[in-house]
Image (cartoon, rainbow, N blue to C red; front, side):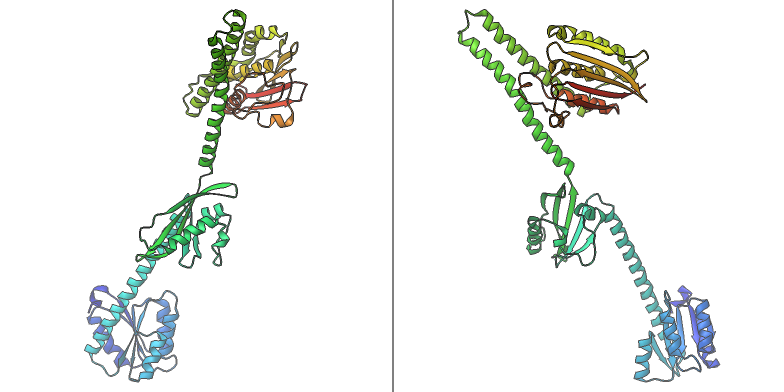
Length: 483
């Protein structure tokens, strides 16, 4: 018998000593390890203390009989003992009853060693089948657990629908994206998918193709843009359900929206100055002002202003593009902001004098050192000072105020210009945003200056804010970490 290799442990339960000893001798010659019990009580005690592969149990014993011992064995959680009933009571009813109690086979007394070996051989095979089945189920459970862990860890949301269009699996990402918590009574309608997606699901379920490609669409749901892929779930070549893959593509969608808006704005900003320059050139080329040199100079001056505005726009666009691509080289060093602002005021003094605008710098004694790239600092404050002059009134003033606040150096750019309403301030730091009213219509600008300033200030973990009131001027306050 195969028991010789497996060294299986057997419990023999019989109230006849001769029968017990006879079975023990036969089994030990086949290298089984054998324990003996003369009644049901002793058998149960041994079963509680040891694990047995096989049990040969007499059916009729005083006290606890073979039926009860068999029942106890099969009701014990985790026990894998194969039971063979040994009895002289060879009736169909008895065989059915022991089978119902969980016995594997029935050996009728009297029997010879050959009969015993044959029934034990069958029991050993059954034991192997049980172990193989347990191993398979354990591996299957492990694979299912691994599969669920993989699905739950996916970046995408996953919803599995059965043949009846009922959700049978949802990972946490899908619950989050759909704002739905999975429960067994969940329906397809509860997922909140659009009619178009449900049509995709029906289309795949109705398809006879085994290679039906995934159906993909973008759908906006609860302030998110989702890419929804509906895939067939096939079993033995037939549709068994649908797998719905959900991916949050809000960022990509917003980027596309921003790109479209950006291109539209750039085209609009480029169109106006180029059209104006070409128009002036065409007028000059007609010759109608050949005898009016002053008029030609005036048109050329206007073309120059438009061209400079166009060049400023291109420079700003190149800077933003290089900044986004991480191609702007920076040299971070300690900078004394007070000295930089003095230099910048001198740079703008001639422009301010032409309109009678008074420039001043207020800064208590002390150091105003920051760590930054000099080009970045120039870009921040030259933009703000330039705006403070462009949107100021003739004979007004522009004042720079420096002070320290905690761990920051704070610079205020105060002008006495036209100011802004609360509504006009809302989009102030967005690309291409410009305040549009009768007072600003003739003032050139790209709409990129303040957006650039905001981006640079953010890069240094600083902050910028504006306080303004129509007719009373504006104050831009920039705070940068102190060195």
